[in-house]
Image 1 (tube, rainbow, N blue to C red):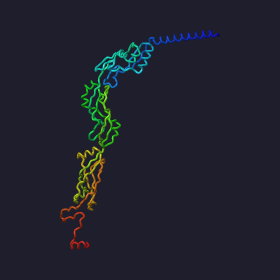
Image 2 (cartoon, one colour):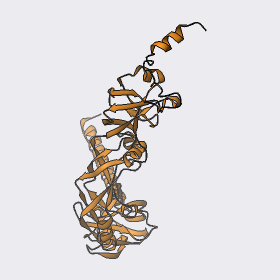
Image 3 (cartoon, helix red, strand yellow):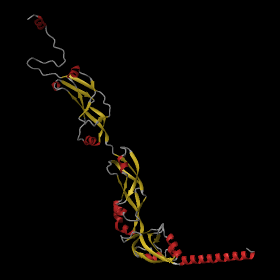
Image 4 (cartoon, rainbow, N blue to C red):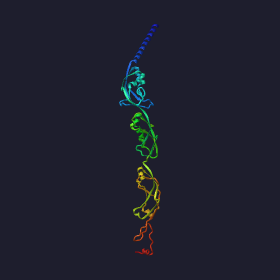
Length: 373
């Protein structure tokens, strides 16, 4: 092939390629500018800007937060719009959607979305939207300070005062709710609760501290936007022991003898009472002792042999207490003075006291006893 023909062939190929490329570009441009339509489920968040005191609550219980939106426009614009709203859109109080003022407002979702930056920049139109409107209640969060705390230790018996740090909290709530129940909340307060697992494992006796969660009344907690500061407080308290200790300043000592020995001996005890006797037992029994319903006495159980031996000391025992009560104090022996009681004289003359030496015999009696019978 001659150089001239080769040059003409190359020029022809270049011309054809240029025409093809231009045609493709024209087709692509036309395709991008062709009218397109897409229907999507768009999540719409009705909210207040971060840091704002406003709160928004839909009035219509049927509002799910999702609207079926059909958008139209150039294909490239529609694709851009779909990508831009894939994560949903926010309609803020004080924006084009609805004003920053208390009360009920009806939002035109179509107009609000068209003014929303993602769709506005894409340059698409909204052919239809369902639902078209949604009614909302706009309110402002206010502070209710110095709301008292009520410690709630269900099933736990405590001793003394339960203190909380801090002693009061601040509740953030919608102004309309504040107007309705604000004073009653100040009067009744809110609860500070410990988890059940903590309540079941509290040690007995001695002051202790635990972090408790501040719990709002159910009716108040159900309102959106309601919160409490701080969310936790520190409770200080003492759990009543299931066993208690009591010190009896004085416990009388009573001698106890067998029935046959009752009138035969005079018994003196020194001291006549035990001092500072410490008893430990269940709280209900200790309370009976404290109130005097259950009397505590000490006894000296003396046997006939001990009386005959005229023992001079013995350790008393505490009687009349349930087995669940123990004597923590060490009981020391007390001093005893046991004296035979002189019986009155009868027909045979005075009778010797128990343990006394037999009476002396005169000579005639001695001779008579020595003669054989």
